[in-house]
Length: 214
Image (tube, rainbow, N blue to C red; front, side, top):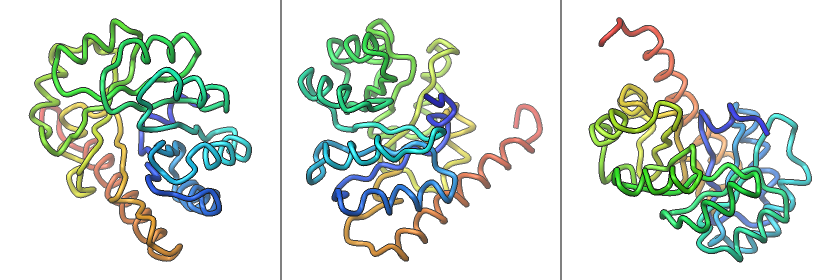
């Protein structure tokens, strides 16, 4: 697995169909995205995930999203995913995924949830839904979370706000409808991906060139 892939942009292809998943993933890859997630509440998600796992480049990671229980976790682990994303903190699911060698991204909102997830074996957390809380919430949490634990905000983030989130301590972002919508054709999808990545790279550059303490 390429660990750096999850410290950037994760493309959440919610609603993707198996016959389109490779085309969408290829467009993401061409624009520099190295982490692709298929939520399990998509049409025929296991078929889509199987296709991605079979054809993924060596520097790309594939994950399952909206993993809610041990049965779903076991099934996607058997397919060969690299990571699993949950909307909540279920310590049994987190521990089982970590034991299976998967990178787990449980969704959390509070410090209590974060530390429960960490005790269960998570080293990467999903602040969800991020837009409800904002960068100030993440900044406050980062003051108490272990430095080794990374946080990825997901849910309602406008690409233009990437800089504020990065300054607050975000390790990357999960973009869903901002990047992919099932009814978009390939041209519109490519435009969305390009816009998201342009905003993300501009934010990274801005952060890199900001004066210390700014």
